[in-house]
Amino acid sequence: MTIKRRELLKYAAIAGGLLVLPAGFQRIAHAKDPESPAGNPFTLPFRVPPVLQPVRSDNTSGSNGLQDFEGTDYYEIAITKARTQIIPGKSTEIWGYGGIFPGPTIKQKRDRQSVVRYINKLDVPMVIHLHGMAALPEYDGWAHDAVEPGYYKDFIYPNNRPATIWYHDHALHKTAPNVNMGLAGMYIVYDEYEQNLNLPSGEYDVPLVIHDKIFDSKGQIVYDDEGQKSLFGDVITVNGVAWPRMEVARRKYRFRVLNASVSRSYRLKLSTGDEFIMIGTDAGLRSAPVAVDSFRISMAERYEFILDFSKYPIGTKIVLENESPDNNEDYEKTDRIMRFDVVRDAEDTSEIPSTLRYVTPVSQLIPQAVRTREFRYERTGGQWVVNGNTWNRYESDANPQVGDVEIWTLYTNSGGWFHPIHVHLIDCQIIDRNEQPPFVYEEGWKDVIYVGGNESVRVVGKFGPHTGRYMTHCHNLVHEDHDMMRAIQIGNNSTDPALVAPPKPLPAPPL
Image (cartoon, rainbow, N blue to C red; front, side, top):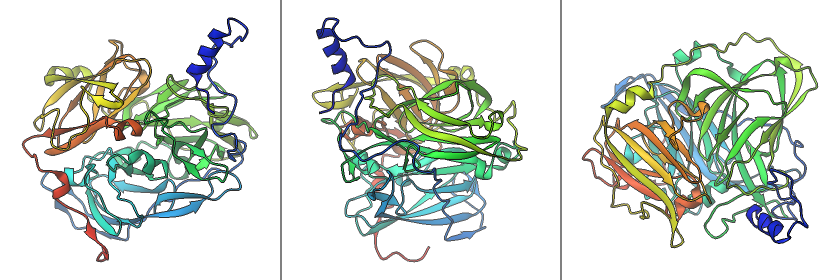
């Protein structure tokens, strides 16, 4: 039986002083499953997902009606079952893009178009969402636009903003179990401006895909959402490895961290107490670097930071730790994520420039707002709801026009949970959090907003560039599935996205 932190505190109070808990006690001193074979942290080596190469490329320029593109790269990804090593000594079945967890990384130059073919070789329907891409509605991963078993679909992506984004399953009422099985991967868009900044690059530009999991005694993935509330694993994986150790050189590294967990948020810090140099948010580079000694990251958020290992002698071991935010269930080893082992010297000509990329100041966006809206996220009658409503594909909660700037207030009126809110298609900026400035590391363009317990967060964003119907939802995937998701419609295009470019049956013609 798993005893939750709030229950443990209740029992401590009942004991009337017989049990004394240290200040700040959070963790339960046992695994979620006592028979879990997860093993000791830092046993397995770190690995980086492979970069997917296009099956074909052309340099034919064109226009999609909104922007010009310089050519097209064609990719193919089969969604399959596979087996892999996530924990020591065990072979675990996963569902993977390209048969791996996480899926292969796609790296694409800004203003080159991508066509990505997904082939469903599983026996359940799949919906693919490229989170952070301003795609047309029919290529955005509308929850009803399912690629059935034995079908495929070609997704067209404009790559119109350089950022660290990601792709994952978005099947109606099945997103959480599907992502839990491994259906997530990173997608990076870059441009020449960013390359000319001379940030750490190549092998020193490293993705970190964090995902917590539960394993049974045979090393297989378990799905337990505790009665449609949340899924909290007792094993932390990075790039598909439980608590890996990464060998690093004495030089600067750029890390792109994605929280791909179903329900867990993290507060990252270094065991040395040293600072992260934060350079990017969900939607790309910040205006300037900022140093912080820790930062909070909810599900689907991405942050980019630089660590400079040159200050450490060879032989130093640095743990990336997790100081868990409120409303997470914590276990014996969820206070650590991975370890950096400094093993060699290396030449380093990279830089951390004082200016990164222009970001429109919030003070300039607020006066442009043409309306405000309020969204309240609650649990009612066993359902997770938005303004009292559950998902309905035929309803829309907002109808801004292309180019409209709006201010949205996002509320959570309970201290018992948090909600990371994702608005498809657009980026926005945080105005304030409970009438206080946002945390310094979350300043910049974002597409996921961490709304903590009893919080009110105001955001401002500009709608476009496309018209059509898109989703907005909580990115606790258990909440999304049951049923904290609503639609918005930009402009007058009310067409159901699932009807525009439906998947096709196999066999597929060559790309």
